[in-house]
Each structure stands twice: as structure tokens, then as C-alpha cells.
Length: 308
Image (spheres, rainbow, N blue to C red):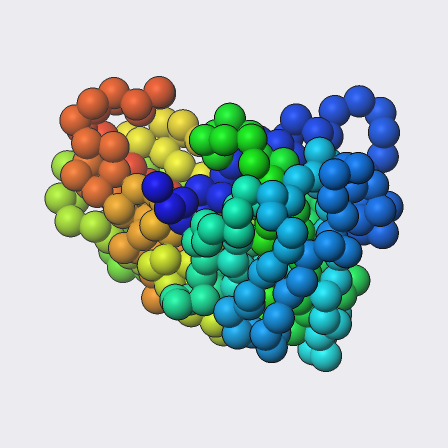
């Protein structure tokens, strides 16, 4: 069965997570490229087509690597890609067994990934390390052995084109907005961490989307990726989750979160601070979820620090 680009990335992330143990430093792009298995080298892979257009990938099949490798095929001419940025990429992958297409993104919108060791999901470290320091428009070839998650042990070969790079803000930035009456009051600590004063009375039954700061950056899409700081409470003010307690923002796909987040954040601008009040049917429903009782109305304050 053909795998989607997201599944390809998820499979390779398992490999990246397992290969990062021990005390060895992360290999550089040049070191990882030269440290290919005896059975193959990235120099044996041919990539044709202009950067930004879907590439053709050919090699002597079967093609195998026992260790991840990456190299720059074409240098870009845009702004330099920096560690900590949110990048947008197109990618295509093929199987090392016979070159069979394994999916890609060129027929749709680019995918976005956070180049950060704080990201819980993202690109393999060898690929990220190779991209950092390149320029937007760069095309990079990457390959690595398969994993159990990929359904086989075949090498996967990717071509990645970087289409954009976006800095991640340290804090919300924009124009303050006076919230409507009857909502929880949000107070910010000196470091920006929010707390709330809940309100008495029944929780609203509809989704409430209240900007507290209206940013001036690009709009976030319902299928895009967001880097955000956030805190969450039950309607009575009981805290249940916060990126602040973990010491760093988090990145997530807006199509991979609860519906209240997708509906509440899509269309908002980077730099915004949002107050969301989410009824159960757009949250976690009637079933208990971790520390959230079934049927809970949820309150979130979300700082949108980057997004696509």
C-alpha cells in the first residue's frame, strides 16, 4: 500500500530517535553523507528536475544504506535557514527496493516543520542538520534504512525542497484587544505565562474565540503547523496542561488536535494571543481523558509564535 508523506516521516522518526543514543555527537551533514553503508552511497542516487518541482529519483535498484545520510543537491538563493525556524518544505520519497513512489506533497501545499530540539515531531536530525545554514530554495537528498513502522526494512530515499523559513517569536506581538464581558480574566506573569480567574455560572455551549492580542504575521491554516505556548484549564479554573511547565513552546499540526483548536486558531495571525473556550463536543467529549473529566468545557490561552 502506498504510504503518505506523513507516514514516511513518522517511520523515519523512529529511526532517528533510536540512532541518537549514547554520547556520540550528532554527525555533520558531510560526515553523515560519507558514512553510508558499504552497499550504497548517496552519490549513487540521481535527482533530476528543477528545485520546487516534483523530482525524479533514480538509482541502481535495490539501493541500501545502513545509516542515515543527507547531502545538498542544489543550493538555494533565498534567506539563510537558521536553527529554531519553522520551515516549509515539499518532499517526495521512493523505496530503495525498486524506486516505487512512496508519496509526497508536490500536488498540494508544502508541509511545515520546526527545526528545534524542542519539537516532539519533526524531521530526522541528520536532515535538519543538513538544512540548517542552507538557503531557502535548497534541494536536499536524504536516505535512511527503514523501520518496523514503515512495514519493511527497505531504505527510504527522500528529496526535500525548502520553500520558506519563518522565525519563531519569543512572545505574542501585536495590538491588544479588549475581551468581551463574561469571559475568564487572563493575567500574565512577568515571563508571559498566563493564569485565569474563572467566572461563576454555566459554561457556554458554543465555541468562543477571543483574541487578546491580534498579531500581524501570516495567517495560520487549518492544515498548517503552529508553534505555540499554551495553558489549559477546566471551566472551574483547574489547570490541567501547560507548555510553560515544560519550559518551551510546542509544535503541532492544526489538523491533529481537538476540533476546538482547529476551528479557533485557523485564520488567526502569527503573533496573536488567543483565549479559547471549548465545549465538550469540540474538545474531548463525554469520556474521561487523562486529568480531564468527561463532558468538560475547556479554557485555553494560546500564544501563536509561528505558523503556516
